[in-house]
Length: 315
Image (cartoon, rainbow, N blue to C red; front, top):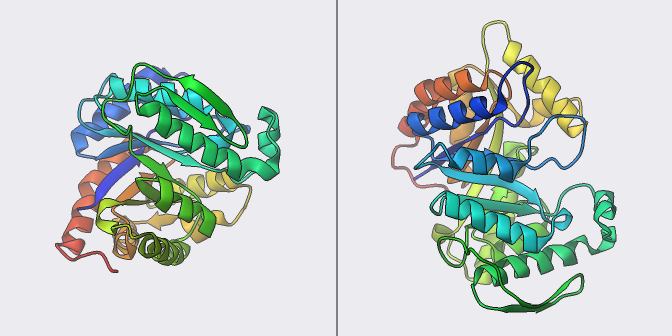
């Protein structure tokens, strides 16, 4: 069965109370039957982006069922000890509803801001994942890595369940996908890649899973989809194109990765993604978010489910 998430707004609007807006959106998503609310991590840049984990903590206070996820935290820029504590706290606040996505990040040089040699990002990633898993175990934990070391560390509170929140991995490279298979509970295809590229990455993922002897049925596979359920004048499509060009610094990115158009076009793209292997789809509109939340739930998701029926995901 496919899970449908929706992106929780992270921007600020002039004259709009952000706490009230987030609470209203989170409640609406839960009422509409979405399976997850998802944030993303943007550490620096001129675009407004509220911190993703703090935002999930706020959403936790006004929801009871819907899962809360971040896709993805740029792990080399974070203290893994603090991240383990923050994630455990949010998991407690949500009653075990947190999904934690982690990734290496695309900007190699940015890690210099936390005192890390860019050439050692992969090593820090491996160390940080080991620390997260170790601290969530509840036992006093030792770790001697190449970028950090811990002696007899223990955190409290712990996550609701062991071994902690589901740990999703992002990333495009074979090494990133290999990490997801070796360490993770799931892998998330980025919103910045096209459906065609996602299909090629799925082939790599399946090769890695076969090599590791992992069962795809017990492994999460997701994809973020930037979209605009467009109106007759194309305003949402223009806003999405402008936002993506600004966010990724590439003027034509929307033409390659986004779904823009009427309900039938959005439905078709989601069905393609699911048939390639995704069992979680994160829908990400960037304007008229509350209205698109309702329109997608009313017009698109029933059509997606009808199109998929009980057909299995393609191997």
